[in-house]
Length: 277
Image 1: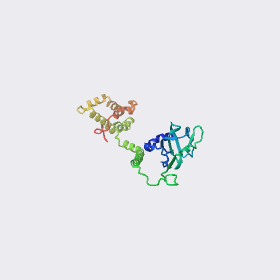
Image 2: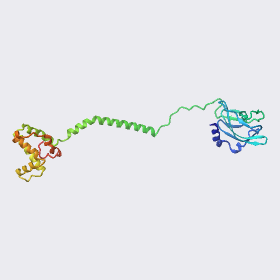
Image 3: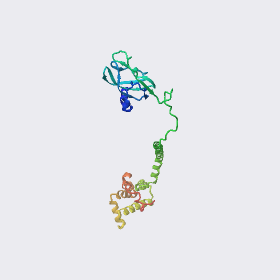
Image 4: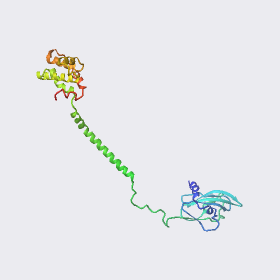
C-alpha cells in the first residue's frame, strides 16, 4: 500500500527541475512536508547494489528504489520517499547493501521533513463547537410527513367511531318499500284480525295502486278488476286477499314474503300517490 501511495503521489511532487536535483550535491537539505512523496532521479551512489532496509512502526521515512542503472564503477538510482515524522534525516541511513557489505562509503543525503503544526503539537486543533447547519427541506419534509400521518390516523379513528352511527342514520332515513308497508296489513288479513272497514280500505288501496301503475284509469271498475286479477304481479295478492276476506276457511297457507316479492322490487315512491301514509 505504501508503494501505491508513493506512485500516486509522484504527480504531486515538485517540478521536473527540482526532481532532477542530486540530493548528494552538498546543497541545503531537501525539505518536504510530512506525508508528501518526493522523487529524486539519477542519484549516483558508489559501491555495490543497494536496497531498502525493512520498515517498522518507528520508521520515520519510507523509501522506495524505483530503478537502478550502471554509472561507471557506481550505480545510478531513482529514489522515491516521504516522511512520517518531522525532523532532519539522512536518506542513506534507510539503505543497505544487497550483499551485506558495509555502507560507510555512502555520502549523506540530508532530508528535512517539516510539519504545518506548531512545535510540540502532534494533533490538529480540535473541532470547535457551534450551531449545526439547518437541515432545510429535509427537516420540513419530516415535519410534514409526521403531521400527515397523525392526521390520517385521526381521520381513520373518527371514521371507525362514526361508522355504526352513520349506518344507523342511513337505515333510519331510508323510506320503507311497498312490501314493508303492506306486510302488517296483509298479515292481519291472513290472521282475520282486520275490521270490515280496514279490509275494504286495503282492497281498494291495492286496486287503486295497480290501476294507476298499469294505466287502467279509463276502464270501468269491474273490467279493471278482472285485468288486475289476471296480471302476474297484481293478481296473486289480490286473489289471496279475496280468499282471506271472504272465504277465510278455504284459504291455503302461503308465504307472505313470496306473496309480497313483486312489491319489494318497486321504487320507494311508487306508492306515494295511492297509499296512505
